[in-house]
Length: 82
Image (cartoon, rainbow, N blue to C red; front, side, top):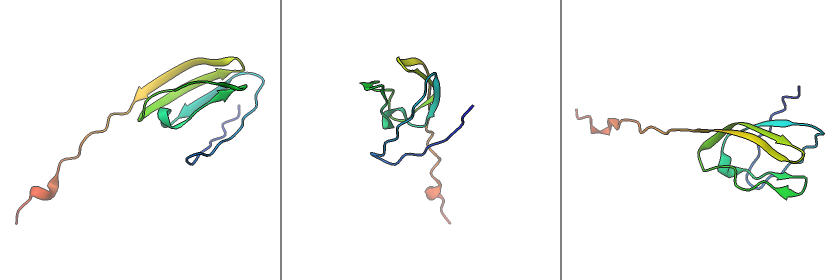
């Protein structure tokens, strides 16, 4: 199985060809667009969502598993007095 990894900059595009299924892990669902055989796949998710498994066939998206990343606030240490 091909496990090639891509890190794309803003507005960067790549073309991947396959005759069967492709499986993707997407770090920011709102930051990527897929066009499958000339057909836009639409919005894949919201900012901050991670697509842990995106299965694509030549006909389109077969399945998608999304994980919401929770950002926790760190305690503010600046209140310490000496």
